[in-house]
Length: 412
Length: 221
Image (cartoon, rainbow over all chains, first blue to last red; front, side, top):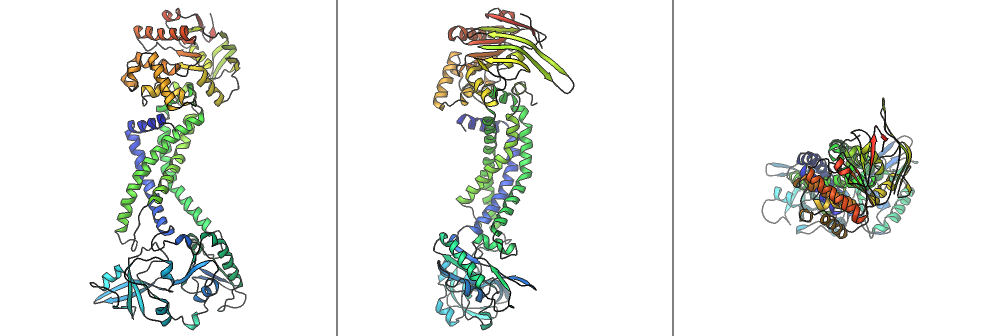
C-alpha cells in the first residue's frame, strides 16, 4: 500500500459521500454488534479482577456418571474434588465453591433476594477481590464452622445502610452471619467470582463427604500454563481410577480439568468426556459471527459492484500503464478495508456507548462491561476481516475488466 | 521495434462475427513517428490497442521489441506495457480523484521505485510539458489542453521507447492540438521515442514520418 493509493482511497470515500455514508451505517452497525459480543466474551474469558489470574486457572465444573441403565451429569461433589484435585501436582492452590444459591434477606419490611456462594478459604487467595472493609474469613473460621460472611458493597448498601458493616450481624436465609468483609460488587460475567454473599463451606455433612455429584466447582491455580497438559493428564488418570461410592459397580465417571473457556463449553455439549468441546464452541462462535457478517457483506459487495462502471476508465488506465491484476485487487481490497476500518473506529465508539447503557440497565446483574486495548484490537481485526471478506469479489471483478472496454467506460 | 505479421482481429458475439482487422502486415522501426488514418470504424483504435498489448490478435504474429507476445500471460504483458509503452488517450483518462502529480506517478507505482524518486521523475516529466506550476491541481481544475499535457507527462514519465497516442488532439481546439503535436514531435526528434498516433486530421498526419491508412479493417497504404 503506497501513500498515493491511501490518499486515493480517502479521496474516493470523501467524494462519494452518499455511498460512503450508506456503507458506513451498515458496517458500523455490524461491527458494533460484533464488538459488543467480543467485549462480553472478553469480560468472561480474559483475566480481569477478581479473576486476574484466570489464565492460570483450571476448573472442574461437571461430572458425568454412565452405566448401562442411566446417565447423569451434574456439578461435581465434594468427594470427587477431594479425590481428584485436592493435592494435584503442579497446583499452587486449590479451592472449591458452590454454585450461587438464591437466599432471602428481610430488611425491615423489605424482602431482598441475594446470591450466595459457599467457598473454601483458599478461594480468597486465588481470586483477588477488592476489599472495601474488613478481610476474608480464614481457614480457622472455616474449620470452626463460624457463621461469617463476606458481602458486596451493593448488598451492604441495601441491608446495612450507613456505618461500617464489619462486625455487624445479618440474617441471610434464616441464618445469622457476622460480616467479616465487604468487597466491591462483582459482575455476573466473572463466573467463578460472582455472588453477593460468600460464606465458608464449613463442616460438610458426612453423607456428602464422598459424593461424586453435587453443587461444587473446583478451581486449580497452576504455577504456570505450561503445567496444564501434565495436570490434565494426571487429573484424567485420577478420574479413570476413581470409584464411584454412590453408584452401582460398573458405573463410569467422566470429567475434565478445564480452562475457563473449556469449562463453559463442556457442560453446554452435555458430554463431560468430549475433549473437543472448546473447539466445537469456538467453531460455533466463528460460524455465528460469519453468518452475522454475511448479509451486510453482501450489501457492501452489491454497492461496490455497482461502482465498477464508475471506476472503469481508471482501471483501464492502470492496466494500460502496467498494473497487474493482483496489484489492482490489492488496491481495491485495501480501499474497502480502509472503509471498514473507519466503520470499525465508529463502531468502537458506539460499542462504548452501548456497553455503558447496558451497564446502567438491570438486564444483566451487576454488569460492568468495558472495552480495553484488547477489545479494540479484536474489533479492528474483525473490521479488516470484514473488509477483505466483502471487498475481494468486487475487487477481483474490477481487476479482470478488459482494459479496452474499461477505457471506453464499459464494464463488459 | 514493432512487427505485425498477417494480423486478424475478429470480434465475436453470440450472433455476429465482425472482422475488425484483416491481414495487417506492419513494421515500425525504432524512432519512427507513424500516423494511422482512416474513416471511423475502420479499425485504427483496434490496431493501436493490439500494438499497445491491451488486446490480443485473433490470428497472426505480433512482436514487440523482438518479443513474441502471442500467448504471454497477464503479468508479462503488464510488465511490457509498463516498461516499453506509454499511452495518450483522446479523452485524457486522468484519474479525477488524484492530483496532477499523483496521476503522472501512476506508471511508476508498478515499478520498484521509492516514493521520493517517483516524485522527482514525475516533476521532471511535468516540467517537460510545461506544467510545473500545476502539480497539486486536480484534473477538473485544468483546461483540456493542460489535461492532455498531463496525460503526455504520464505517458513519458517511465521513459518508454514507444508512445501510443489515440487521437490525442481529437478533443482539443486547433491551437491546443498544435501544442500537443509539438510535444509529440519533440519527443520523437529529441529523445528518439517511437510514436504511433491515430488521427483524423491530415494537418497532423503530414507532420509524421509515415502514414498508415486503413479502410474496412484492411491496410490500404
